Image 1 (cartoon, rainbow, N blue to C red):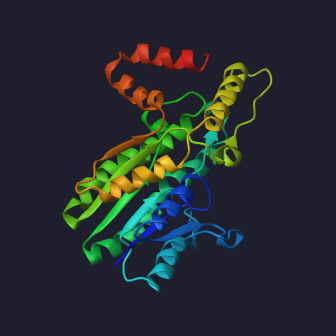
Image 2: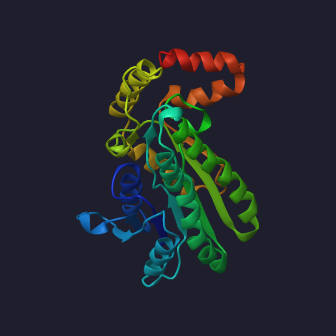
Image 3: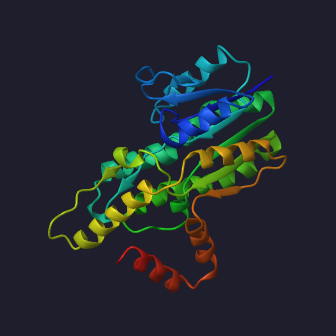
Amino acid sequence: MNKVVLVTGASSGIGKSIATHLSSLDYKVYGTSRNPNKYSNLPFELVALDVHDLESAHNCVASILQKETTIDVLINNAGVGITGPIEETPIDEVKHAMETNFYGPLRVLKAVLPIMRKQKRGQVINITSIAGYMGLPYRGIYSASKGALEIATEAYRMECAHLNIHFSNLAPGDFATNIAAGRYHAPVVAGSDYEKGYSHTLKLIDEHVDDGNDPMEVAYTVEKILKAKNPGIHYKVGSFLQKFSIVLKKILPEKMYENMLKKHYGL
């Protein structure tokens, strides 16, 4: 039987690429969106899910199990972007980002793990970010939310190993998606001590997304993980420099690495 895969946040961007690619292979794919009726002509079925709501997560899983006998794979992809000087970013927006990027996947897991435990098998891929490996200026909240998910996944992996449920992180770099359109931007405040640095960084971020690679690269990496006999803990996909930045953080003195980032962002 074809494996059943649940991909959150599959109406656009990386999630849509993952769900579309897996649908072309031997997988039965269900994607999620807060408003699935807004989308049509997708090669997979969209199910309603608001990752801010645990009941919504349980309802999503229940609706899939009305049609399927298992949920074999969960890909936690739903997320939001957020930029701004941390001091000037409204706490409500910080909470919203954490609710989506960190607590959201945990809620979905609370709904899916009992199913996987009962069927005595399962696989989870949490989509994080290369930004989660470092505190990036004016993206600190986004980095923190994705970094938190990276660390939590490491713990989940050990806690669930004896249940035959396998966890992996997949951290993309910048890809050509519409994430910038949905990202919360703290306003650039004229006369602020952060005005110059934040303005420059916003421009740089948008250039990176516009020049980003095809998100299908992430989908191909998901396929690789799903076909691996013994999936690893951490996977990265992106440009050479983005992936190499993680290596540099490990080997360079801390202040040297910090100065390298500051120079890159013109700070």
